Image (tube, rainbow, N blue to C red; front, side, top):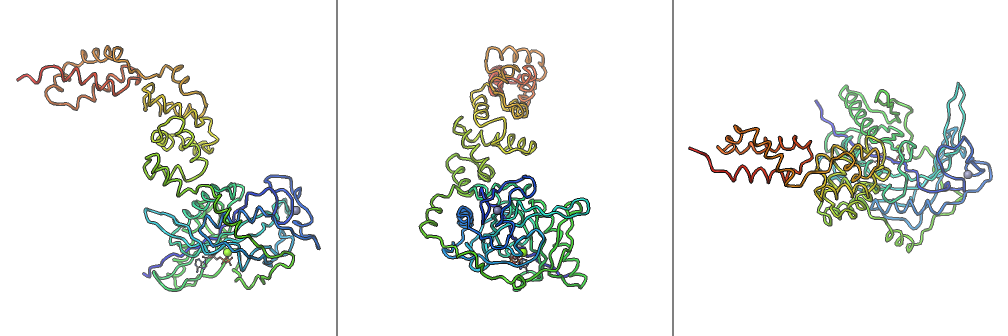
Length: 481
Ligand code: ADP
Ligand code: MG
Ligand code: ZN
């Protein structure tokens, strides 16, 4: 059986966080009634002239900087010619050579292995409109036409579907962290084309690729790549040849289907757009953007580990997106216990957030409330097990943890006198176990702790109970012979 190595490269389209479109002042917003946000420029009227949105250039450069690219002080817009009903100009205004940024990389980690994925280029382009298929008719909505995008093209450096999905996840987190995009995947703010080919392991040249278009979730990227790897392997093992083609992923069946054979770059008849002057960026501007970059997830994770003493895994998880990281830093500074804050976020908060489909920053349980919960535990008023038990209710309601614990009568019993009475009662009920303990079966201590905890409805402070029990059990005379 011949063995094959998978080779994967991604093209990721990212909607930029601008208020207006790339070449006109129509607003960019999702969900307006069809064709309400359209003018003569973005509907391709003859003679209408484009005017470049400077904010889009800034965001493209910031993305390039975050991806370790070289920024070109001189770049060009070109026309990429093809016909679609929802492409009113008859061409897409994109960049060919030179693009605004190129030659970068992004480091990812998959299954404990560090991988450096090359970034070929980052270029600016405008989005197309949308076709709506309604009752046998096809209607065109141009609200999206002219929306500013960047396309990030990777080198064919990924070797598994898992690496492809992780690469896209990192790109998403990075670009959301630096506010280049809102990252809303359901609204199509990040869409990915997955290119897959197979070759004998370590071969010098690349095999023929298929390109699966427009994947809008990490899971779909993974599934589509896995499907293509399996499909191409079966095809090659059968003695067949892989065709260079464009495919579509069907989320229902989790399969890809051929859409059309794929064009090569020369088929698009790229040429510089005569309506747009070159983009010239002052190098001082580039340096200013570099200086004012928000903290990226990688360095932020390193800082969390170093400054707050978090385990690497917690630091990476909490720094992965800006919303979670900001939540953590606010709560940790309010309560002064970053490690417990991190543990509660990792174990409880993020799980509840995922189940409810909200970001940490949107939770009813705000950073000050989580800080209050941490202080209750640290101060001995609430034991950790009960804190975990009531967490879903705190999360759902957003009430003060202190008030909640008081109203439900959950405040931990740490008072030795009150607990001593329970301890004495338990000891009087189990003379045989006491003898066993004193005879050397010291593991029976946890049996007594359990009985005392049960006797207080779980509210006793376990450390105090342990201390009391040990004092009483160990103080007695040693084993009788
Ligand atoms: P196009 O727009 O025609 O698809 P691009 O150059 O923009 O061309 O993108 C090509 C993408 O496909 C890049 O991400 C590149 O890494 C990847 N790629 C190119 N050749 C192969 C191959 N043989 N196998 C897998 N990926 C490939
Ligand atoms: Mg492509
Ligand atoms: Zn417009």
